[in-house]
Length: 450
Image (cartoon, rainbow, N blue to C red; front, side, top):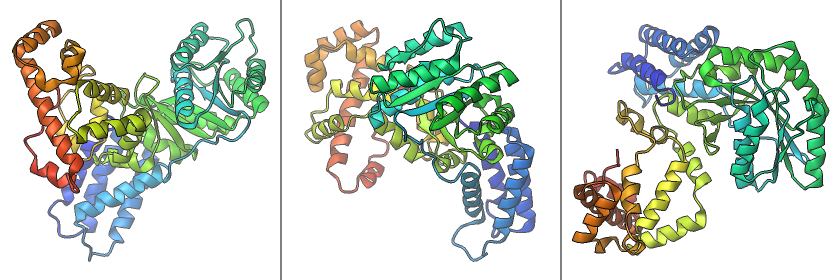
């Protein structure tokens, strides 16, 4: 299920009450807010937050001037959107990267995803900010924790500091910072131990580490699928640690979204990142406006653009654009584009970030290996064939079909769609108003592979 899909559907039904209404009245707004409150409660938003939220929306809706260009349903969506943004923090919160080195302390319960997220942040800041991270294994209790951190670090080519025999996480953290200074690492990310539940020993230990290393950022990592338990745990940690921000993991799962909506209002600390999968690339900065858009089924085009910028090399993109203009875009380029898209995350979640696509994709399952058949066909081509797609004729097509385990019809279909796509891309690159052209080309675009 896509993030917030159930909540989005329920809210859409709530707004249908106002469809066709000439104006907002106390009666229809009360009925709408009753349904909105039910939708929020079903999404595991805590009752007090849901009531405060709907009361505020009702007050603002009734206070609006009746003479408005917006219809009641449109006006209500706008008010709900603005209140959701305010509830989730209004502005995107940034990491504090001061300090020499910058120290980030990861805290949270066992199984929330601290270790994986330590690597995700390291990779992100290494590639985007040019940082030289050092990952620190300060979990002295879980035998696999340090090994897991080593494997993740190896994958992103980042060094790890551990002390196999030590049982003192405070000293490990201090020694790691000294190591970072000696080796000119300007970012230290400390992975700490988690427990199955909040307990005094755990709190004492993480508080002692924080006191010793004085981090620029203390980040609380929590599993969003635990709903209100996530919010309650965050409050317990914040009361003791006074952390700087929250990381919500597993937002790609069957989450109802209540933690994302509620946590800011309860602990008064911003959500800084969300996890949208298990890969190290599956990390997004939390943007309240973009998240509100997605909850209301309006997509998140800014978030999509940011994800694209994270994986696309600008110089490579410029070269591809030049090839498109000259109609030289080939299957090697296409394969590179597929690889970049796959790096961006789950395909259905990406589609939901495009305005209007959420509804269109409802009930359509997009498997993670959606490009598998296309990749098999392209991999069965010779280098010359990939660079000269228009020259792939009869016997070549038969050989490619046999080599890829597909049919000649599948190969013919891909070649036809690829040629159609090249024509559209070339036309788009030379037009002043590509959106107008795209509307004119509606129905002629090649279909997606699912």
